[in-house]
Structures are given as C-alpha cells and as structure tokens.
Length: 486
Image (cartoon, rainbow, N blue to C red; front, side, top):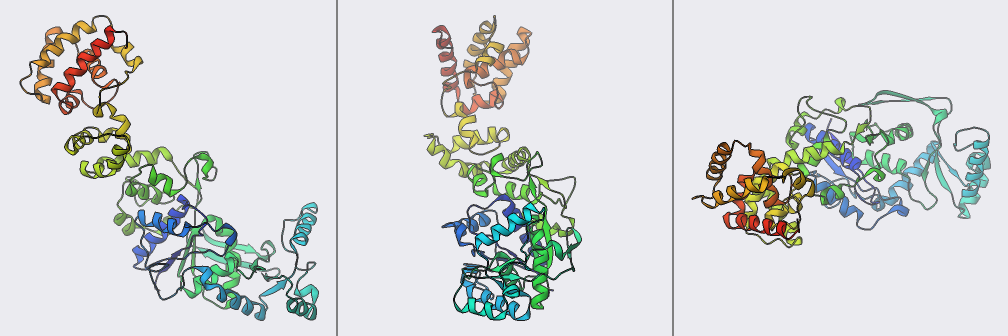
C-alpha cells in the first residue's frame, strides 16, 4: 500500500506546538515509509477564519524543516487542497448519504435545539440529538419535508446513527476500540449555510486524496466512530487511524497559553534553534532510544515507529527544552551563532568588530541557553561595567583584599605578552609566594573587570578585552571606590 498522510490545520491563528507535533509525526512516518506528505487547509468554519493564518502556518512548518509533496502552493493531483475551494463536493456527497438512508434533513431552530438540551439536562440525560421528537424528515413525513425544502426553510443534514449497534475500529497506538451507537450523536454533516462540518469534509477529502493513515491528536478520538460510520455508509475503505497523546503541563493539565508559550512562532522569536525545538517536540510521546535524547531529523526519520508512540499524555517540560537548546547551541560554530546574533547586536547598539564578537561567542557559548543571551550576559564584553554585584562585592572584597589586589595588578602590567599562559604564570607565582589560594585574588579581579559573580575563565576574558582595557577598568574601579560610588 502506498503511504499517504496529511496534516490538515484550520487557519484560525498560530500553529500550536501540538499541531507541530502532529505534523512532525505525519512527516516522520511518511518519510520513513517512502510515502507522501500532504498539507490540506480545512477552512470550512468561516467564523474562526483568521487572515494570513494559512501563510503563517506553512511558514512555521517550513521553519521546522517539514516539507510537503502536495498542498496549496506545492501542487499535486488531488487538489484543490483548500476545503472552501471544494465546496460543491460536500453537498453532492451529503445528498448521496440522504438517498442511501444514512443521513437525513433536520429543520430545528437554534432555540428548539437549546430547549431540547435543557429538557435532557433536567432529566439527567447526556445531550444528544433526539431524532424521535425533533423537527426532521422522520417526524415531519416526506410531504412536509419536501414543502419546507421547496420554501427554502433553513435545514441541516444529520448523520443517521443506527440503533443498538457497536462501532469497532483499530487504532495503531491504542489498539482495538469499541463504541456503542447509543453513545454517538446524530452529528450535523452539512450546516444550514451549505458548509460541511469537519466530519463530512474530513472523510470525503481523506477518501478522494487517497489518505492511507490518519494521524491526529487524541481530541479527535471521540469523533472517529462517526467517521467509521461515514466510511461504511459510502462503502469506502477506511484509512488506518492513530491518535496521538495529549500534550500536558507539568501539573498534568492540558497544555494551554495560561501556562506559557504554546505557539511555535513564540519559541521561534525567542531564539530557539529549530533543530533543538524539533528534536524536543519529536520526543513528546515517543523516543527512538532510551539512553540518548539528542537526535538529528534524519535519525528521527530512520527510526520512527508509530506503534511505539505512548498512549499516555506527554509532559511539555520547558526546563528540558531549555537544556536541549543549550546543548544544540554548544554544537553550533561561532560563525553560525554570530549570524543568529547580528540583529540583536544592532538593536542593542553594539558595534564591535566581527573577529572580536566571534572571540566572545567562543568564550561564552557554553554558558548560555540562547544566542541572544550574549547581549545581556556578556554586557561587560561590549563596554565597561555600569554596575557591580553588591552581594558578590560584600563577600569577596574584605579587609586586606585591596592590599592583595594592587601588587597583583602592578605585576600584570609587567607582562611581556598579554596571553593566558603568561598571565596565569605571573599570578600563580605571586599567589604561591603569598601562600594564598586563587579564589582570594581572582574573584576580586572578576568583580573589577566584569561587575559580575559569574562568567568564563578570567585570564581568557582579560586576553579578549586586551591589556589597555583591563588596566583602565582596574583604575576606574579604585577611583569609584574612593568616591563612594561602589
């Protein structure tokens, strides 16, 4: 069987990370099987349509490295790939269902539907369309139904769910699923405005586009029995189904914007490396290897196994994502990080030679999570410190510190070469002579040069800053102390 899968987002806003995970798993499966990846835009719900959302969705997917074989802008033999451009198809197939007795017309108003639900609620019955009492072609009769149609009275087409049957299907991830028809609603298939609901359009399009596997989120699992009935009603072969686990916050609640960013674009703007982000998302419910979590896209494609996806919800562990991004950042060359950093440096008004910036990146890239962290984290590399860590100063600058520091600075001035080994040897000999540990001197020097308590090796930092800059900072620090500014 030729594998054909689709990602079918609605253009209702940003691409949720859950949507990216669904698209990614479809993509990994298709590429692993040598199949086709299709993108289809499901825009039949015009009330939720957002301008430019389609372009933004595709842009976010392409940023993540997901490519398509068919879809809007990609071509293909089964288009159009936008549902609003397939409008006439759905009415035809809805009519086929009515003629076969698998669907029916209903003429209930919104007020009548609400009254029905209130009655059911009071009776302790789960809300469900009551075919036996509401205004539809079964209760109205053939002549009255035709009269209402001829008069143009608003109507919908509903699925006729059989009584007292069992709907069975196999889910690749969840195994055998069985649902009693008494628990399935007579779903609206065609709305009063002529637009199809998700259920009809989804099944019709998947069939006509020869989709072999439907890989989607767990939230669509309750809808699948209705889709199974539709496939049977049409006499079509069903695709295989696989419903992916929910994405959860650390407290096991469903992932939502209330707990932080959930849009792919938000993570992209914050500076996450796409390979790190895709690697992280790929592991939300599946892992090709228990002892390693850093994987290339090619590795993920080669080892992807839909049957190994977990049933249980996957925790969206933000600290782990941050860690993974830092791991990927360390693997980037200084040149690659420089390219990520150019606009941030410009925005911060930092104008340093490229060679200098590259040295700073090489020095500090293992101490940051994002490339743009360097702007603030390494502020002392772009200019003299404007403030000094008071707690660090109180801890490191004690009685006798100045008497230890001043001779060391004078010694540094005598260095014939301003390089790490030379500076290290000078200070090492000096401290050995004094019988003092490195921390007693290096921490005060760090304070004077950077104003901070953390950073890279001090000798490496001093070499990049240069002799003249370091000596100026020592002098200015003492002047500020004498003036009571520190």
